[in-house]
Image (cartoon, rainbow, N blue to C red; front, side, top):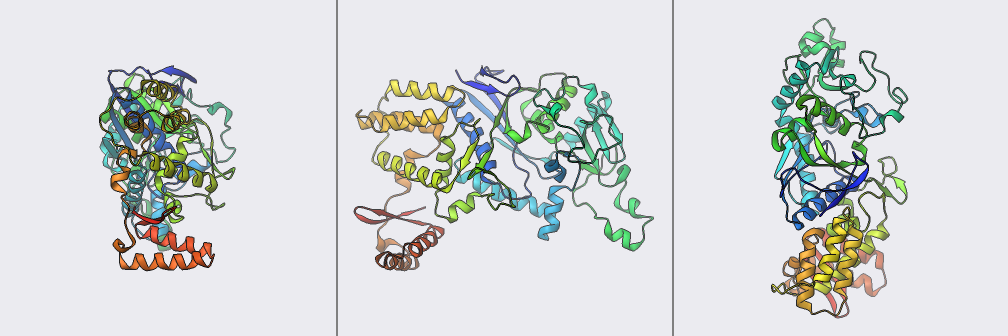
Length: 484
């Protein structure tokens, strides 16, 4: 039986689904105003590992992930998600695109990264902008029940009406106004927006600017993403989408809700409050949060230039699956320190594991129960992937028959997601004469640099070859080539 740490109870618990063997999982996906970075991707990899571990234990999964393409305001960086600019609108101005074009572009980029890491595609990927009616319906229900009130800038949830508010987080340790200006219209400091007006009191752009002169009119931006509602023209608050969409696809109570540690303080407590206020039922049974990533011991940030994307790693010649392998080396609840030397070691270990298993054939042979039991024990112990991976290596290096090792390790890889069983057939060696002419010329150029001990230039050429879809492997037998 899987044991998992539940952020709500702050302890490791036996996982007991509502309707076994079926399990409902909801993961908070990205806000698609920019590229996902390696910290984001670690959270989605954790979700994938939980899903795979549950399948390994015989469960059937219904998996939903949201894409936030409206309503996530920049004030969230300062501790108040109800202030600032809409991230989609801000990105649109910066890039000279429409907000819809921004959403489409970064959604596509995210899904490409998602597939590159061999993450299991959710049964449903729900966009906030595709579910505006469901969000309005939920807000109306909260309003009718007396959990919401109106201010000049929107409709707010009244947290005083929900006594258990903030039980998931340590919100009581955060002082309002320390980093953001206090909203004097809110009844309580922790009340949060369900619906934001495009312009004060839900007016239209024309109504709001009717009394302005031309200079003032030009200074007021017209929103690109806005909808009519019972309270006026506007757009949903960030938090309401997850409640509305999870209820639509998974029902009022779900088994597991997954997200990054940053969502544990406000976004997820707000989801709980509005969902349970609307339904009168428990919203989520198990909350799972992944820890942050540091880079060279420092917090990731644009200002430090260490906000790495998967693309940045591939540009340096790294296989995306080496990042997945690196994630496996740290428990999901432990802070992970990313370095390029660690990623290099992970890629080398992955390559070695691939070399060991490349000649193995999954012939349906019986596996080795002792190791399979140890592996299952590791993944069921709060997803202890470092221990699970050590079991795989112990078995790979053992003297057991290859056919038996193949049966067990390829089965274990259903959880690891390293694609070992099919890697060989997808990556047969290619001879120099089989390479396209332009690639072959680059290979010869690289060899010239290597003969002259100009290794930096040789590595640069190798990176160019990788970008063109081929990898150069330097083996004892000489150079080998594989299509990426």
